[in-house]
Image 1 (cartoon, helix red, strand yellow):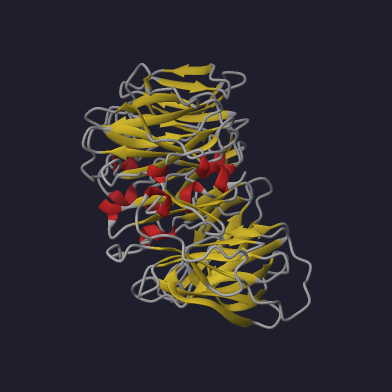
Image 2: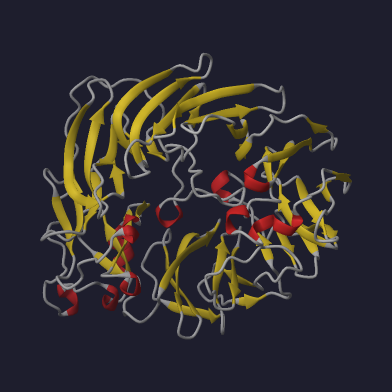
Length: 545
């Protein structure tokens, strides 16, 4: 859709300092040349809005033909902006600085993504804009959480869902029944303009939704709810209840939604665990959790994964013990336990198998992929511990790619291809930043040379020649590539504050056959332990491939 059409349907009060609203030219687009033949500032930030920090400014994303970004001097002053690709119009989605304090992104299948804001003073939820619907919406309050704040939100087929909880004090609280977990209230909001927040019955300690970032389709409501009394309810994508189990301490869905693993409330020491087939309703007993007393970070935050399960598709599941050890693995169809590699730490489960760290000398790190289907243990990583091991390889068919971190910043390092058959490593690039964007001609746009203040050099690199050509220096590392116009980025340092676009230089070598162009994550991060199933999200909920 045309961004101009989006803006023309809006009140001029939403435009940011434009002449059409009778203001001066401060903050107006510097250029509407499109495409630009040199780096061009499309939007100049007000002189008094130099960011004191820029971690949030990586939130630059393109949805349709519109750019969205956040800007402010510090966290309390963040504002959300929308701009067309040529900088003709720049719009504030939160037109007054006291309208909202934080931003959320949700949506529905019918409407697409929707930007929301939350105001701490009175718990108000404000719908800012339907990002994929023509026109810029007038902000409208859709309801209030009361004396609570957002705990989570999820998109659905025809509605969005939010959870709220009393003010969070920052302390870790385990998500398990009967252990003092934070109470959650569940809310529903339809996608039509006149819809308002509807509080749904019940109070919960856990509410799970289909993981759309992992490829699951959106549902008509939550996939799982658990109360502090141990009442578990599981739902299908149509919102119909498919399982009701009582006396449940904790539960996790399989990634495909066909099974659920649950732990029975018992003596708080050794408690029974089961896997239920949701199609048949049959429970199979698994290895009990003998470490319930320390599970889920109850005593030590470092043990927050103890007592959780990792899945390999919906077919195999592994119990995590203290220090992330792999305690047991079961065939989900039969309940049968199989022998696991000794003294292995489990990092993640995936369709490829269980990712493990194997016992090694103190100055060495050894990682392997173990496939429970056939028992193959493929040792793919053996490196000096001077290289931080903080991510898994990016797998594309038979090709494995790995970022070996050899810099202080964990989003940059050398880029390697690993032969899945022999385990041999081939260096492709001496330095690469992630996420990065692969172009149609095989080149890569990336951010490099991170410094203490997190500003970077944007460059495009030719893999054949290993020549790096600078696009911009001392800018925020998040960027967006658009084939017709080049690279969009935010400059948050020096006299050129604002939103910029720069054309890409011509390729110095002939285009080579590559896979489909697009944004790449560089592989899942595992240095900061998360509960199994957490999505690795990019700016504004955009998941790199």
